[in-house]
Amino acid sequence: MPDAHSIALSILQNTFGYPAFRGSQAEVIADINAGNSVLTVMPTGAGKSLCFQIPALMKSGVAIVVSPLISLMQNQVQALNILGVAAASINSNTSPEHNTAVWQQIHDGTLKLLYVSPERLMMSGMLEAIGNLEISLFAIDEAHCISQWGAAFRPEYEALSQLHTRFPAVPIIALTATADQATRDQIVAKMFTGKAKTYLAGFDRPNISLTVEIKNSWKQQLQGFIKSRRQSFGPENGIIYCLSRKKTEQVTALLNDQGISALSYHAGMPGDQRAANLDRFMTEDDLIMVATIAFGMGIDKPDIRFVFHTDLPASPEAYYQEIGRAGRDGEPAAAHMLYGMKDIAMRRMFINNEASAENHKRREHQRLNSLLSYCEAPACRRRTLLTYFGDTLDVEACGNCDGCINPKKTIEATTAGRKFLSAIARTGESFGVGHIADILTGKLTPKIQERGHDTIPTFGVGQEFSINDWKSIARQLMAHDFIIADVEFGSLKITPKGRTLLRDEATFSFRPDVLQKRKTGAASRKPATRIADDMPDETRELFQALKAFRKSIATERSVPAYIIFSDKSLSDMAINQPTELTSFSNIHGVGANKLQEFGEMFTQFIKDATVNNPAA
Image (cartoon, rainbow, N blue to C red):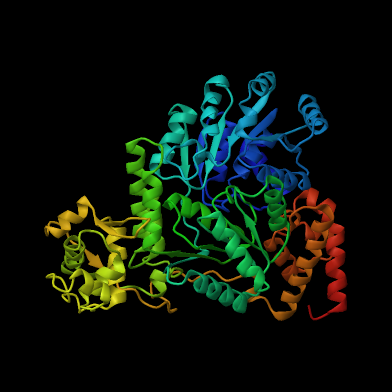
């Protein structure tokens, strides 16, 4: 009789079409099968879903999967159904007739995975109903939502802490890609009362290039980024994050006016319009979603090629989660962020105005400080981000961030920092960065003359730096919490930490802003290349033809194209050109059900394409 590992591997190969487990997948599956509860932290694209889907297919009973978004439930259910797996969801969009049919499947013992929201699961009627069922496991997706220290705290997730005591014999797997140590500790404490094994698979997403640019003229910077991407790669899917609903609409209009297909997504839109825009984004190619943070959690579209932040995110967790929507297929993707002094001031204000305890605000300020350290990192940016999450980089430099491509020299600037703070103090902490920079460089403006600021001791004492350098120094003083800015009026204030610098009890280093230019570091990784980059022309033509064929099938079935086959599967087809079912069964991602459902049509398509183009 085959052992549990052999059975799990057989399901992986025959149902999902993958040859072998990756990372800690096999260990997590073994723990769940043994009845143990686990917390699994894996980077996006590492195969978290398999860690509960395979045990669900191995064990008797139904697995209850908690997911925060209806759209994510629908996509996962569609993908599983195409694989021949009996899965369904019950949510606010499903009809009573659908729900009745699903419950019948559960009672018949034919349904293996049921997807629900936390709100739906924790309703008293639902808990009573599933209390009479054989439950194989609970899977809590996006588990960081249970932690008040997490990037996307949802109070509804708090109630899930009852599952461990209410169903003590049922194993629970909590899954997330975004959790620092404090968040992990809180998930384990709440979800498992401290009794669970944690699998930490690392946070690195080496295929995503990381760039942070100082905000100057954000519209021009965004347009330049989009123009450069389109010139290099043509139209592509991407996400642009904006801080406000108004800015979201503004950016969408800007792109559409230039003939670039873009949609908006924010909480101020009618729900049906949001759902329609999300559906288009998930199913169409070459579309950009311009959104607030209302968009994103659980978005499982593999071919998003870039994430652009027009404003500073709230924390490293929020940033990591948002850029994690890019490159889920393992292909090269870009994360590009703009930030400036106003962003820092706005984020500080948001934290201070929260209706939360002081210790929570203090922790949020610490998180923001960590994100600012990432933004101001003088060397490898990826190393700074991974260090925050308690992870390490296996090389000195990643070679795929602006810090490696264009290293920035840091200079000791304690005296310069004290000059800047002195000018703020001597002008009554009532002026913004431009006025302070004018004072330090000795620029005799009407405003300076009117207020007599040309007579204070700091007038003209900073001529070793340009106006732009002083603005950069101000931003970095703010990033290191030496100064803060009044959000409404922009006047700079000295913090208690700044007072220590003013008294020469602290030090300050300055990193001059430099223009972006591309070069490769010696001890760095080789940046990822796109699937099609290394193909001969004829193979690339077949690959593109297969993509068009896949899209026609997906459109006919009203599902996202990647649910039919991934780009990696199509690449495998284009390279190996299987024209009969035996060879088609060896293609990446082809399990038994996909072989039966799509094998004939794809092998015939490849046969016709290669006959019509023998060189392919």
